[in-house]
Length: 133
Image 1 (tube, helix red, strand yellow):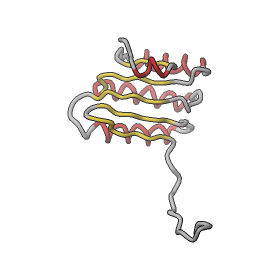
Image 2 (image 1 turned 135 degrees about the vertical axis):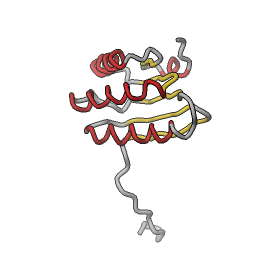
Image 3 (image 1 turned 90 degrees about the vertical axis):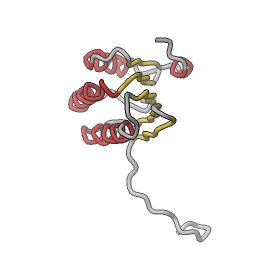
């Protein structure tokens, strides 16, 4: 019970991400950190379920500023997921922390290897809102 006598709602552990449909085919995501392949698979499953709510390719804006450099196993799973989602992504913007050059290089490599030129990385919030390509 809370100190003011109200009953507190019990919640289990929260996933390290939020994925939601903003409007139409626009999907927004906020990601903490993928420490395990299971973390990534849970996130990918949620993105998949949101994407399947509407027919056609989605536009996704993902805030990855809470991420750290991925370990090899997680990075491999992310690459597989990016490749799997290629046909479902019309446009994608990944916002990375400005002070994480190693993560940026890693994500650039993953996107390059996923072979979807409609995905972009940025670390400037204004650019994130108004992608020029």
